Length: 360
Ligand SMILES: NC(=O)c1ccc[n+]([C@@H]2O[C@H](COP(=O)([O-])OP(=O)(O)OC[C@H]3O[C@@H](n4cnc5c(N)ncnc54)[C@H](OP(=O)(O)O)[C@@H]3O)[C@@H](O)[C@H]2O)c1
Image (cartoon, rainbow, N blue to C red; front, side):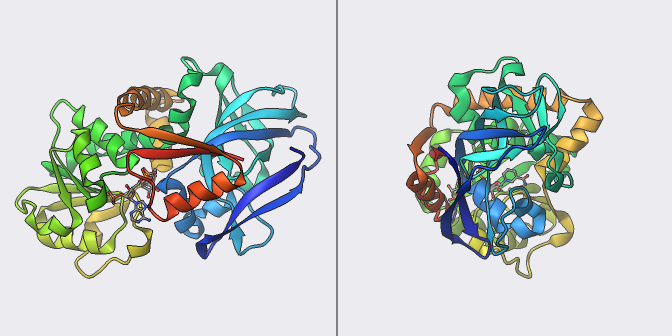
């Protein structure tokens, strides 16, 4: 391909999309051209768009026309051209890419295992997203797990962070963890982590009717309930809520039911992005947003460089292998395939036991 093809969405309407092509730019000294091989699309990427203004996700891959943005995705790319002495053509990288076929990078700090894109517009953004792993320097890298790494690593690394955060806070005094949007992969990863604890709390998954069977089939949650059945849950059990849904009505009903037994709510996700108004029953003083990159930065300080990555990688690998029992990854190629996957995920049509890996 000789042109950059970029999939753009309208920032105020994620269903309005277009593919914009432009000539490949000439590389400046120190820059490299990465050819995006393929990437995963899950509800996490929709969330990047939903909270794009608030958290700054539009700033990674800026578009001249301010009404439009590029959604970041997790995937692999291969270096196709290089003006950098330490980055060779053919090198394969894993990390955070635009929904596009190419990215021009400006490698800054480079180690055997990682490379940081030091492009000026990225410097103020969370470092976790600017750091790419160099496949050739990654111990135990297994190319056969590329698809699983794209889909599951960012989500299960978050799950590992959530578990670590809850454990570090003695489960906030709770005996039960309740997870709305229990069919999401980040929730399932959290369930793997919680259930591997020596003394795991009771684990309740909340989901919609169409995903209930799939969630039950995992055999990970002690109890699976529908959003409609929230009022039938035991209100006497001190509980912590790990919320993937961002659904104001669901959280309000849970908080009302539990009252003082709602020990803490960790607002992790917004899979129900169109229902995110919190009502009067929402207990904001015991709720806080969870931001995995922030937790990773904290643990990097606490544990020293590389230690978090090592533990998260081990957790991801183990949980990804277990996930082969239920997860089917769908591959597709071409601009139409990218559009199809985006719409499927945006409209909530991707089955809970499936995920997309696509490429231009
Ligand atoms: N805070 C952080 O640092 C962080 C890090 C990683 C991920 N996350 C968040 O965790 C959430 C889960 O991400 P994921 O990639 O794991 O999700 P996923 O596996 O793609 O989740 C799919 C599930 O989300 C619900 N859903 C998706 N689209 C929907 C729609 N349009 N309408 C209603 N329900 C819909 C459904 O679950 P139910 O039927 O069970 O509700 C569906 O089975 C995202 O919001 C993501 O941003 C946060």
